[in-house]
Length: 297
Image (tube, rainbow, N blue to C red):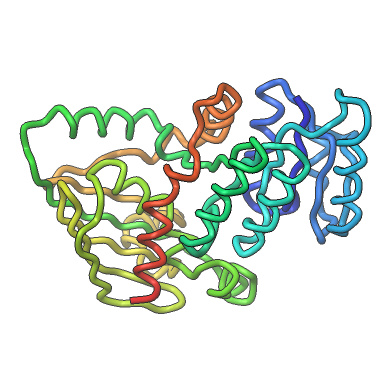
């Protein structure tokens, strides 16, 4: 099958390129306003590359109206968050499915419009909820569901240190990224809702450009969460060992270990998606609604 990709110069794009390659598919076109895309040489050196959206759009339309074997089947979207909605619409318009990085959209009401387009075009919108494909977390969900304990006490800490550059990039712009809660936290909010059910109460204790914290009452858990991109929030032991990231989930006093196993998660999600068993709009909706609720409280 034929793939195209937007945001190919970005941080997350190599995982998508690897997944497209590992699943035995072709990348026929790539877009990014920045031309530092040497990563293509490692996977698809013959890919048509564009720095202008208009020329990329025209090329995809040309492929669509050419021989059937050249049309794009999937558009992988790794562009900045505020562009996701527009690039998903491009995918559906050219008769392709969209495979979009998190978050699908910044505002929940845009999901309804995308569902309308799905029905109109007959194409699908998929997203990358890779934590749901992590073996340790799948096992954890099965354990939680099998347990007789009806309510859990959960503490989530996610610290992923970022330099000064972050606040000057699109990621530091709340209108473009959704801020730390959406850009950094969306996967972990999805994980919590997937594990413990829908939210009834959300309280925000602190919110800044670099940190956020609060509490959630979920169907089966009381959660205290904290997100940070400040290296000062790393545990001293990890910081002294040179680590830049700390992921920690404690359930009823027991630490859940899932530091390893992230290498091939995108490929696993791609395999599921191509098989028609990926994560769609309704899978993504609860976390998008919660992140929007938190950042507008």
